[in-house]
Amino acid sequence: MSRHQYDLVQCMKQMGAQVGKVCGNCEGRCPICDSYVKPTVEVRICQECSQGHLRDRCILCGHRFTEEDSGVEAFYCLECVRLEKHREGCPRILNMGSSKSSMIMDKKKVGPGLERLTG
Ligand SMILES: [Zn+2]
Ligand SMILES: [Zn+2]
Ligand SMILES: [Zn+2]
Image (cartoon, rainbow, N blue to C red; front, side):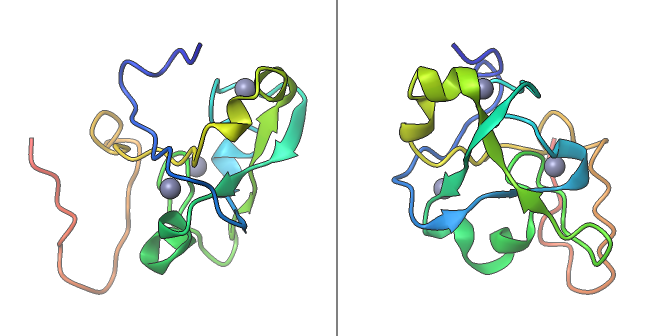
């Protein structure tokens, strides 16, 4: 049972060969249950989530990777692997920013503000 299901929506599309990456903040965190205990199996994400601008972002919080923090491989914890949660689909969180936008300061220097949040 994921305890953040009430708020967060995950992609859950069929996983491809791409490894999911997380930022330094989310390193070691299981994308399903948020546990930091016993990271066991590499996270795979779907085709869509591994392309374009999504490729350079943390799959859990959406943080954009930088030179200092270029992302590390994400892992499912042992418990979720036992429950076969890691086979359910791409674990990328889709609605990040809606509830935690204040935590994610996206210091964009170029480009138009297309990602401005409403509400
Ligand atoms: Zn887990
Ligand atoms: Zn996906
Ligand atoms: Zn992150």
